[in-house]
Structures are given as C-alpha cells and as structure tokens.
Image (cartoon, rainbow, N blue to C red; front, side, top):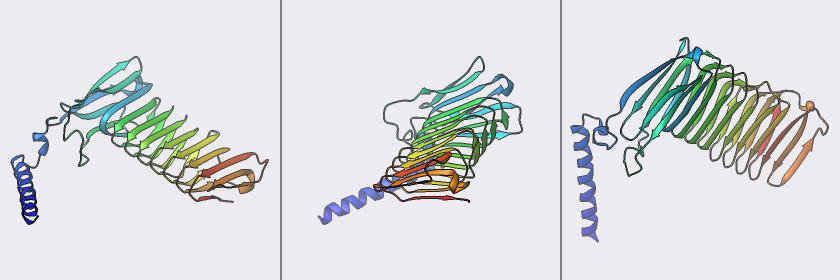
Length: 287
C-alpha cells in the first residue's frame, strides 16, 4: 500500500512538472497546444439604419451587447478551428450563426477554466430593431440600450444580465442552467424563466399588463417592480421575495407555500400570484 501511495505521488509530481513545462514553452498561452488552435480576432460592420432585426445564435461564446454613441453595428468576435461563424444580411435581418464545431473530444472546447470565445456587439443606444440573442454555452450581457422593438435572450448554460436597458415592446429572457439578473430595465410585458438558477430584478418597469417570473429550482428576488396589473411569480423549490411599488388594496393577492394558500382583496382590479412548492413567499407593497 505504501508503494502504491509513493507511485501515485510520483505520478502527480510528474504531471505537474509536465504542465509547468508546457506553460513555459507556450509563453503562457496554452491554446497553442489545443486542437482548436489560436483564436483569430475578426470584425463585421453594418449600417444600423439598414437593420430591423439582429439575430445571434452562438454555440460556445460569451456574448456582450452594448449601446454606444456610434451609428453602425459592429461585431467583434473570435474564431478557431472548433468554432466559427456565418454572418449575413437577409433584407433587413442581420444574422450571426455558429457554423458548427468538432464533436470529437477537445480539451479546450470544454473550457474547464472558463476560456470561451467572445462576441462583443456594439450598436447605437437608440436602435429601431428587434434583438434576439441565443447562446448554448456562455454568458449573455446587455447594457445601455434603448430598443424600439422586442428583446429576446435565450441561454442554455450561462448567466444572463441586463443593465440600463429599455424596450418599447416585450422582453423575454430564458436560462436553462444559469441565473437571470435585471437592473434598471423597462419594457412592455416581461417573461423571465430559469430552470436551475435564481432570478433577481431591481427597478423594473413594465408598461404593459403582465410581469411573469418562473424558476424551477431557484429563488426569486423582485425588487421595486412597478404596479403592473398582472404579476405572476413561481418557484418549485426556491423562496419568493417581491416588493411592488403600488397600493396593497389595489391587488388581489394569491400566495401559496408548502401547501398553505392564502387569498386577499378578492375582486381587486389588479392581481399578484406568488406560489412556491417548498420555499417561503413574501410579497410587500410600497403603500
């Protein structure tokens, strides 16, 4: 047994020395030893006035969308042998889509250290276009943007964050494995959905009739939501905490937690429904 322990320790030392040697030979760039190769930086540019819909379908990438004072849409991205993109304009639709990736084992494609390809999109702060961003693996971040249409974000494995974003129409955000965070976001109707992550919002303004937030195994923390006529909050195994900027007496309140259901102000013109199967529920109003 002692001999086996010594052999195991020796093998670990040899492995660490091999990794250190590779790191030194690469000049600190281990991607030189990757089957994916060294990433290549690229840029695509289009006139924002010619675009009424921006669609991004990424496979393995962190996607950032930022509003600026520029007049064009610029897409800065990286490609390697495992991931590359096709960008085209079909009429007024600007589409960026992953061409594919190798499906054999690639250590760096699995990104154990979180080294994803980057897609950085900058566009005018005031944009008269729909924005639809989807990522299979990687985060999605949208900030400093005022859209004159819908905003749709979908992430299979990664977090989604919005900050200082306005949309004149609906906002739909979905994350399968990751959390959703909104800060100073306004739109018409909201539909937020997370399978295994938390949903947290601050100073959210819904000018339409509905605000929905659902998480299967995460908690909901909805702070400073305006007095939307129809609010629906649900979680299977997480807590629900909400603060609504409105009068309690104006809302028909339907809460349920651990089999205990309570109703308040039946017949009120507005309604809030907050249900959690095994978590706590706390809904507060400013008045």
